[in-house]
Image (cartoon, rainbow, N blue to C red; front, side, top):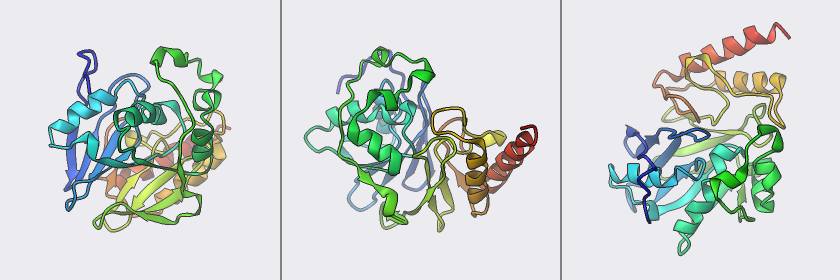
Length: 249
């Protein structure tokens, strides 16, 4: 894989053993997470970024001796461009051994159809051609009927449907390790996902945040901004903030 000098290496850290965080790199990118199977070294990737940052991810992985060619599964939190566009260059890089893709409901439907207008709605005001990425129909495993999924023998995540930011939004929650990967539902610092995109809803977003506010969370690993090992406090703060804001509507 050719690495362009313009594509900066993603900052990364090991959150806990075999769980790695890669920070969003540039505008319209997202945080990404990788879980390594300690037995066979296979990798599971959560969200794929905007496509322009994929080589930055590969560079960051090298710091932890993680080989991108060992990515065998990709788990998506929702259908927005900054989380799914990286799928296409990733699949090209792994064309000989393409990873399995997992998404929920509307996200799976959109990716299976390869519909550009749904991956990048006109309301966003973004010219998809600027990314130089070809969108095509994908084979996707729909998590709609899955209550949980085992990533490795160490990590098993519950699948929580949490719309409000988008129609296909889900959270991945490991109750044993107290890990929450919420996509763009909640962020650190009391922040939360936008609800003015297609499929968004303030009232639905509040209900979804209330759902995760009842969980026991230590590690909050959101789609943007920083991560936290004080997850319960961060989720509770986001819930208080959106509840207080909603009183004005």
